[in-house]
Image 1 (tube, rainbow, N blue to C red):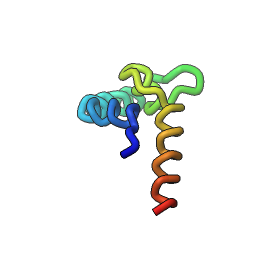
Image 2 (cartoon, rainbow, N blue to C red):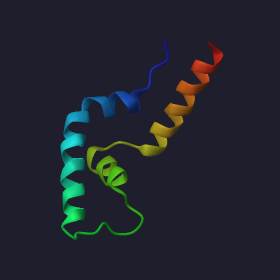
Image 3 (cartoon, rainbow, N blue to C red):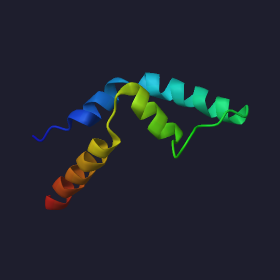
Length: 69
């Protein structure tokens, strides 16, 4: 079985990520802004130590595995 370590890391912090995401959405609604090209997803990933490039690479690996079946 192929392992997807970055997805496992993301799974472990999903509850925290959800709560923080809701808080960031609320902050944006209150007029706070994120700098540069940051999105809520990118900001959360940085805070939680998730590498979004690795997540994307793992997604491609998952899709390739599914297509082989």
